[in-house]
Length: 432
Image (cartoon, rainbow, N blue to C red; front, side, top):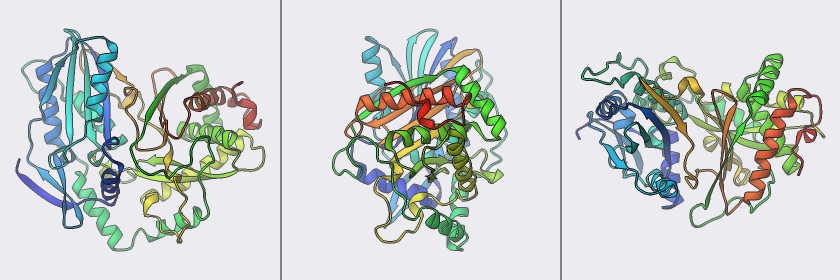
């Protein structure tokens, strides 16, 4: 593969590179997506669509290496992404084990870190795994990839075509961001976060303290659903309070964390897309920033009070999302251990999920044991009815029984607050 472009890694990529170096063999920073494909799949057309997808987005044909003490991106000429074909042999447990091995297999960053694997279950039933290293993608990028792949997949001899990418390619974003840092244009955002997060601490949750050393995670996974009726009620509250579903869902999580920990002043992390410029709407690459949101609550807070705190914090975070938490200057000893390791996020909804012509496509949850780069990651995925949820957690820190209680309390909170947002949040918890 011929290198066509070399640029410095973005600040976010450099942070991920440091994490990759120190996390050990058990914690690769992969972002896998699994799809169940039912129907008359044209496997050659799928392979051709993936090749065109790689040619379309520079981030998907970028390798990474150190140049002295600098991490650099090297963009390569378009190259064929080999669609690895496998046949399912054995029972469901063996199949899930095989998927898990593929999901967690580390990438050689000296070549573009993108893999595609197709398991044939039957002639009209298959599972597709797209596995991309976090250096080359983020949650928003996953929606762009799914949308493009849906347009590029066309069964039959005539290949599909798309207009050229109108947005920036990722190296364009990296260079623009570098200039903003060098020109001091992000100093105001850094100062905002320094003042907002002064003296903050992580919530005191059950389990071992954060900041452990040595070894990788012992990953655990808990999946769940939030019923359509409960989500409809929460959406109605959103309309009445003029807040987004993300804000209300975040508030419900903060309310449960408050009830579990008893803290009135604590921080929770969340990923923000960081795509306020229209040039980034169709960019594939690691643009998102991790931010820490500070909740300061009164004694016995009602859900309305938690929701108001969440709305204020989300509004401010959107205005200052260019600076990630790790690049906020803080006084010596002020950074709270493990503060960024309790993460809430809401992923793309049905409008951004994969649709392939003539096929029934279902996005599958990651296999149990897939892990996360956080100690506790609480993720919601809007579905056609209700919400799907996944909790990734480190079993060395959090007991499984507590995670199940967290999920139960969250479902009860969402179900209860629409009718009684003026009640203390503890009134909405599940019965032990």
